[in-house]
Amino acid sequence: MISVIVTVYNIEKYLGQCLESILGSTYQDLEVILVDDGSQDGSGEICDQYAAKDSRVKVIHKTNAGVSKARNSGLEVARGEYITFVDGDDVIHPNMLTVLMDAMAEGDYDVSMVYGIQVPDGGQDTYIADKKLGLSARHKVVSQSEMVRGLFGTSVDEFQYIVVWNKLYKRELVQDLRFKDTGSEDLEWSLQMSLRMKQAVCVEEEMYYWIQHQSSMTHQGINRTQVDRVNSYVLCLNDIPSDKTDYRAWCLVKLYKVILHTRYNARNTKFNDEVRSNCKSIYKSTISEYLSSVKRSSLKYALLCFYHLPFVYNMFMDRQVARLKKSRNA
Image (cartoon, rainbow, N blue to C red; front, side, top):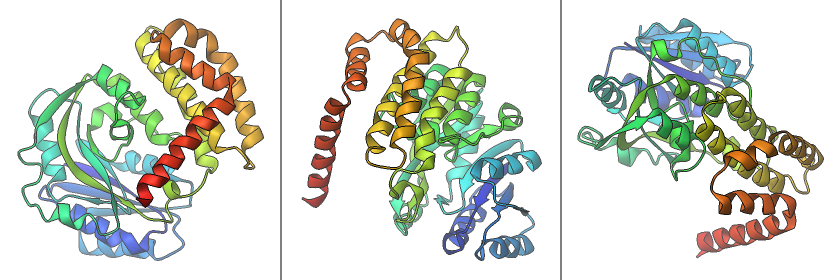
């Protein structure tokens, strides 16, 4: 059985299509745990309605405390041999859970994964119409090293490794792992998971649909979550054993990139002084290891140049943003 943990908060407009996509899966041996994180709209009532008509659905109503604690509440009651996560305003392909289970059964894998894709609301319909999607897709074995490297953005598919909602986990691998309230809760949890796993299998098909709403966090300006994201990478660095020198070097490079980007985005905002102070403190505590562990000299010193000459980085980013806007308007 698969335990599907669904986090719900003020998404009454989208929750129905999410639950229909899960309950309509070709894989039917499910336990769907809906964690209503103190919704103020009709989301809680929708959860109860689905529980009343489908015995596979279980509902937890709790005081609002954020997505990390909501997922933890789901983990505490999950009974399935396998666990996956779905955000309550997203949609999955009908074959996704079947594909993940079949891939897991092919070998000694701790995790199976598919690709997620960002789509506008309603854009998932084109994909869902393909009834054979994923059934004959290519499979790729992913080692622990490759998973960790992916988390720190050495691949164009960085978010595929970080997010938890495109993967299926063996319960014994993650049942005692808990999410922390950080700027990137998926990242830190996924790193802990990756340090435990031996190998995963990736089905190279886009089967999870990350629905994009203009009101969502990703479409807003810099906010508290994005400011705290820097600290997520510091937590990751603290989680990585000292003998995993390659892992730590990858994390440090990504940390310095995030420092630069966060400092750039915080300019002329109420977060500016806080961000600059925090980044300076992190730099002082990590620079020695950064210099000794990062082997690629050109990248290492380019990031240091940007750090010490922020106006150069600002000019570089301003040009990139201008090019992006021009391409979108073309």
